[in-house]
Image (cartoon, helix red, strand yellow):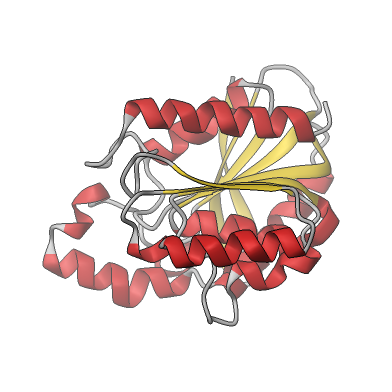
Length: 246
């Protein structure tokens, strides 16, 4: 397994991006991993590495680079009042949908120029805020995305102008969307609206609910659920295996 940190130049600066791929020349199907709202840290890096180990060229950008946040608090960011306030008021607002799509433009340019990556059709997965971004990107980039997954994503179908469900008519990817139980950020009403909107747009999709709490996938969260995390791995790797070019 090969791992490097790429200093990805974007219109807004330099975005540190973890790159993983198997040994050898490839090319391997390209996958983008959007992190959760806690930030880039070993638990997210481990997700990117495990995907790559299954035969993919994986890019995991640190989406908080604009404000220099390095996730030093980890999951404790929510129990430290000052750190939590900083996250909510300064850190999270730096990763707007528009900003992340500009970052993704730079990522796609890197993938197109990288001989070890096959970017004919890419896959995207994301967690928490990254789950919303993953589905939004599937609509934003249309037929460039073959598969997109969201795990414990929030605000998937709302009145916001950047709600992912609004881009359903532009989505050509196969989608897998797994929500958490008792999740105010993606409640039953949103799930129903998203399901209906994707069906009406003839999008190949699954919208389901795992028996786990919001944030169950990354190994460092208090609600990490090993059983449902493995279910996530089975669904994600099946999705990519069936949709991305070998």
